[in-house]
Image 1 (spheres, rainbow, N blue to C red):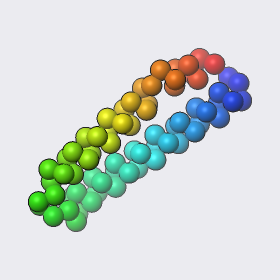
Image 2 (image 1 turned 90 degrees about the vertical axis):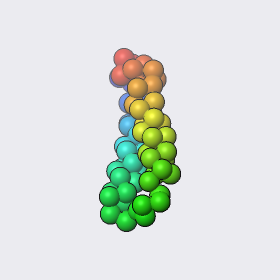
Image 3 (image 1 turned 120 degrees about the vertical axis):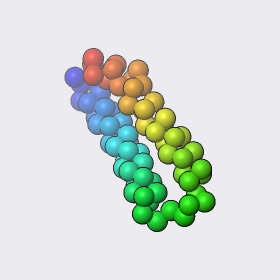
Image 4 (image 1 turned 45 degrees about the vertical axis):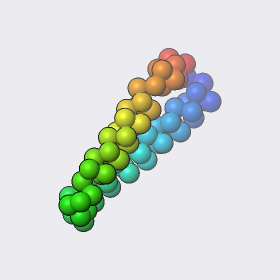
Length: 68
């Protein structure tokens, strides 16, 4: 793997890990502090974030970088 491909893969991995951590924080907040009226909004937020993380982790670019 070339140095630039490796560095790009590391950057993308860090970014997806960051969004994963944000999702974990939202989940923790939902279980501990979120008011009951916020459930629908939080579900929408968590769903959107999970979709984004999934797209990031399964993007064709990841496979290209690994192949490089």
